[in-house]
Structure formats: C-alpha cells, structure tokens
Length: 398
Image 1 (cartoon, helix red, strand yellow):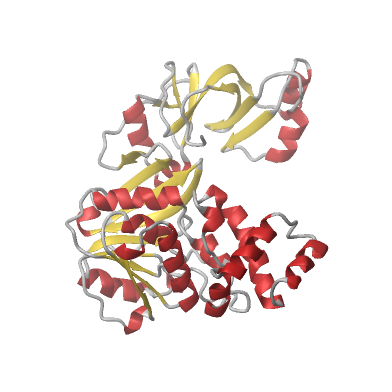
Image 2 (tube, rainbow, N blue to C red):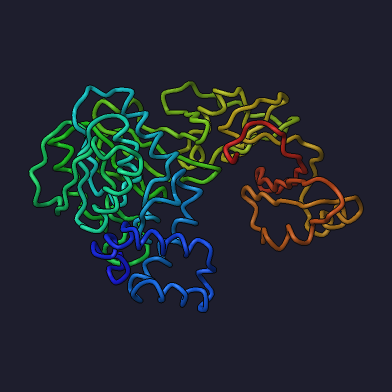
C-alpha cells in the first residue's frame, strides 16, 4: 500500500464536506490531463489532490466489481486484492448455509470487500494490520448501512489471541515483492499461522490466488476454484463443517457447481454435432469426468479437454459450439478455405496445438459474416480443425 497517497488524515479530508466537493469536481475532469489535475490544487493541498485523483481512478475501475463503487474507498493494492461483490456474496451465501449464529472473524479484511457480504450474514470482527485499510473498511461498511454489524481491530494477527468458531482469512500475497505471489510460502500471515488458526478455530475459508499450486496444500478441507465471466478468480480452502467434497468448481454469476463426489462418465466417441468447452475452473481441477457425467457428454480422445455430444445442452459449466466442418489441420489450406468464403471474426481455440493464436486469428478473420470459432484439437498425433459457431445458450462469460 502506498502510504504517501492515503493516510488516516487524508481519509478524514476525503470524508469531509470540502473533500466531498473536490471528489465531485474530479468526477468531471480528465484525471490523466495535467491541466485538469492542476485545477484540484485550487481547492486542496497537493497531497490531498493526489489522493483525490487516485481514488477517482480506482472508483471508475471498481464499477465492474462493486455496485456502490462510486462512493467506496480504496487504495490501489487493497482494491486489486479485494473480492468482487459477486464473489464475496457467493462465499457469504455458503457460510450462511451452515451458520449457527456465532461471530465471524474476517482476518486481513483489506478494504472490506468480503466484510460487507459477511456482515449480511451475522456479526463480524474485521481485523487488519493497516490503520488506513481498517478506516476504509469502516467507511465502506457505513456506506452499506452495515457498520453496526461489525467491530474493527487494527492489529498484527500474530499478536492476537482470537476466540471463535468461524473465520474468513485473505492472506496478503504481496509481502516480499510488489507483484502478487502464488506461493503459500510467501503469504502473510504465514502458512504456519494458518495451521494454528485452523487447529483453534475449525470452521472457515482461506482465500488464495487462483494460480496457487494446490497439489500440496497443507490444510485439510474442500478446495473450491471459483470462476467469473470465464476466468478463474479465487481458490478457497473450506474447512470444518464447510468442507463437503475434496474438489469443487463453481462458475458465477450462475452459481452452478460441480465436485469430485459426482458420478463420472468416460465414454469416448467421434466429434458429434456439438463441442463443449468447459469452464476453466473445471479444467484446472480435472473435473472433466464429472462434467461429462452431469451433461452426458463424451470425450473425443484421452487427455483432450473438449467434450462432444449430438445434443444441444445448455449449462453455464460449459459453452456449446455447433460443429460446421471437421478437417485435418494444415495452416495453408485453412487460410485458403477461409479466404474462399464470406468470413467474419475468427476466434482460434487451440487445444493441444502449438499455434500463434492472435496472428492466425487476424489472418483468418474478415468482416462479412458472423463470428466463427476454430478449434484446433490434438487427437492422437494429429491436429483436427473444427469450424464452429457459438450457440446462444447460457454461458460462464455472460
């Protein structure tokens, strides 16, 4: 967190009547134009103006994450590491499904993205080492009329003797370097702290980067990989009474979910009338047999992640593509084929094929027809090209 931009004193200014006026002025300015930015200096100090510009930019960026983004308070790292509203509300619903009335400990609360959702379930104790982020969380809870559901404590977790039965923790992933880490050896508080936390408070959720290597995580429980709009967003370790499976993939906004306890299907067949491209959370957790069982799909080759069927099946866990043509892949022949017919935008989807995706897509695309999707599928030692059209069914990217 850049303390030169946000301090508790700066936040006091931003929440004052004078600060509110400057923030209103900044909304109508081009914050990247030095001349417009200088206009703010007539109304506040350079330090206050810098914070106004930073907050104005972050609020605009946050509109995709939070309904009330234009009135919330963020610092840059706090915003980037915060759970979006839709992910926080999903996790809060999971907690509410087996909630017994105890206080919820929201540890490393940041700017309060998860705290807001958790406070809708029950009373919360929000803890963070940063006084600035605690103050931001307080202001964001107040904005959502939830401040009376939450206590706030600015403290190093290692110095606290926490009591309770239910926790949510979001370890800092930028401790040793500015870039986010995907190693649990570099998070703060440490994995050893989390070991002690689970032994004392058994039920809860550990929020990790979706890119974390989960093959050797030390904590028992359920691993849930959550995607939103076709991208993996969070890996959650659910412990205690919230662990119902070993692996779970969930896609938002639909909330459709699949886990490793569900029936599997391992049938292999030739490419049918439709291809199904699984949600990336399912692919990463290797839950393809369970997806095939749920949707009655077939594999097209061992190790191939794209599935097939002769039936059109709408499910947010996999996008459906209508097969139009199947042929061996030769780049020169494919280019000639697309040039010989009316062509619109072409999205190239290599699944086991080594191609320069953006370059090939540009070479194949035209402007005179609907969009096509070209799957390049490795089947045994050969690459098959499958020309398809995306079906207008509910999908994980909507």
